[in-house]
Length: 362
Image (cartoon, rainbow, N blue to C red; front, side):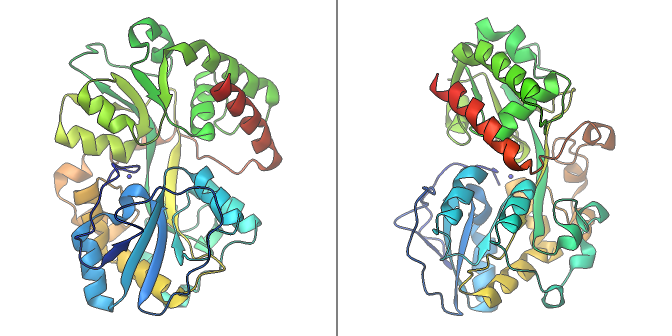
């Protein structure tokens, strides 16, 4: 997403943003003592890259007088486990993906959004105004969206990947030169999609088939990794990586030899959101931050500086043509029609977790 899961970097010199320790601290799954936030302090729990654009953060503090503090996480699973274990009491804004909003809502973890306190909701594109995962955005506000796909080094792989099956067809050449996301629903879902099933299959027979297919590929996989692959692919250690579109676009802008592909059989279409946890110590500050990000000029700046697709219509319309025409950032409708949104699958998640644990530990 910025990178959706970006390089960890120390930016303590950034005015207006205070980080945990001397730099970003990746989230670990443990309960922490809630911080008693005052009205001029706001704690975010977010994806690595969503709070590292210095000018945006500085301007928020200048406008509101509220200082930002941020902890970051690499996966929805890590975030949710920490919050469920009681470690989310410090945070007033969290950034779950769409299907996790459902899980947090079902777990009684989210405050209801007071829409009267928000400015600019009418500027959201129609597909983001009444999402299936949170009707009428009653507990979440969309922040950015994108796809999951493959980034590859075109100087090494002259034949570009077209679909997920490319990994199996070329596994000998790709051995230890590829990474998959450290995300059970994304990885299992991609293979399910390749096999002709839904990303959200609830049939154990189909899930087992995906697991068996991944077992065939496992000797070629260098790692299941959501963040560190970026350094490795830039250094030439990797030829290809499964990744989120925002991460890929950021790298392709830095070095055009890297290309991003949305698999032709389909992939996941995700939305990352902003929510206010029921335990938020500073809900007033949370509304200030959400209103700030809903401003079209702020939302547009996240696109131009961080390669984040905006759900804001006015922000999109204000973008330079090269951004609006970037089909990796804003895919055409015929591509999006083949994509699935990851959905909350209830108790079946335990089946995914069982096969995922076998895959990674076997």
